[in-house]
Length: 203
Image (tube, rainbow, N blue to C red; front, side, top):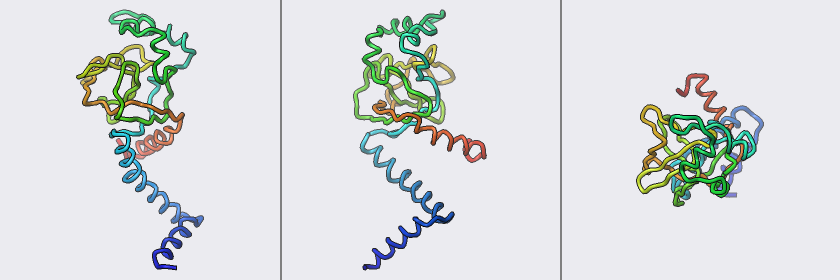
């Protein structure tokens, strides 16, 4: 057996040990692999800075059946209306919405796989830079060569506060389109971030 093979065998046996040290070493190796090998590789393949996004809010949730959501409250200009009326103002019908990806929304804690290779169209769910430290994942309502308009399915209106305005999302702030949903796996990341914030490690 070569020296390299012996070293490799010893490393594997060490990691298989049921000890605190071997567990800590395994976690460090896993962290290094995910952060500096897996994610950069996935970013390269999917052509986006954020190939995997954890959904951290309920802005895209549909708590009810589609028709109940479609008739639920929204805000049109300066008056209350229904989601149906809101989307109608963008020439989006009920049938149009049914043809969109993730037309039943998705939940806080889901993981979304994102690609930057696709051409974004009205109704696609996109990931873009917001005013916070984390990206926003909402549905595109209007798509132009220079900017987009978006809205969270579960929101009553488009978000406009501080320097962030969903009625004018610049193209250069868009990271890509969500193409695959993995339910609830994102809670691992959410719990970990909350733990770091609790101990003051992350602001």
